[in-house]
Length: 396
Image (cartoon, rainbow, N blue to C red; front, side):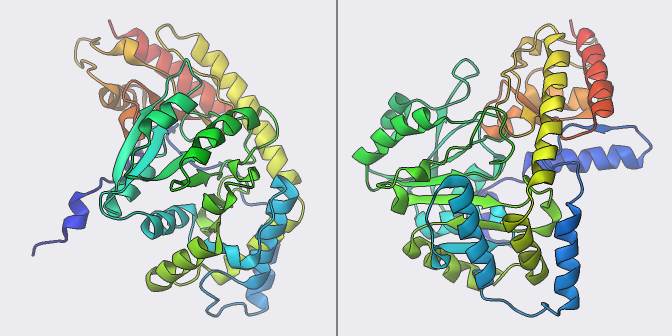
């Protein structure tokens, strides 16, 4: 049977591939320490779980409106006002089965065959593949460790062409940990004002995991707001990855387009999750802030350990829970058995020799780097980096 050509347009996420390889080794009895993981290693806060149990008991078990229950969309509007001083109405909100679906809806609603989408590198692995699924063209703009992995206004303006349909970025960024300040967003806004035809997709899923201050959203620039799609969700800030709830805040036109698409794919997301999400968004944020403080401690320990390894150049992440070091120093080196030609080789070397999983930088658009997570226990972080250091010292 000949399958659809859509399958040849995009690749399986490398993050999922590495997770699969780690599970296979673990099933063979190998003690693999997972630094490839993209989720908090915390349980969902108790008060959110209690809200879900109550929703089950109260029989919130039927189909819901495609964009989500009204009280959920109102709760999202309240959160956006409380945390970001942004005014949205429920009809501008669409809740989906995870922020990944929110991104897919948005790109399918905006991008036509041949449209260009500008994406600064490094970027989350799924961005480029969703653009390809929508038959768009990915325009990568390469940032650097020295620039804090942030795009400059000059780079942005140079990348815009008559075919540019959208600009897609995240802050805090997965994988680099870069966080855009208000001033940095403001100078980008100057460029966007010159190009009113360009939509701006702002992935803010790591909003709460910010180590440098108050989160700043590009949607705060009111004259751009109708062109901006905010993508957010509950997985990272509330340790609710398996609950699957993401959302967008956008113009009514874009929200209605995403609702139309979603109505044919999945309809609404899980009804119980929606009710739990109302509690998550409108009540006590203390568990989230405590989780972030633990991530801050782990970041400091990780950077301390990495600084002790010759050959690694590393940016101190400002948000999220990853480091994304430049490991190109090891290209061309060998332990006598394995020769490291690229980041993929080094990832596999660390998995098979040190039994530590990571994700190659090629997947994020930066082949000189590797992503390591610190969403693991302090004990495992220390064990993992001791193993990594030992494995790297064997490369000559």
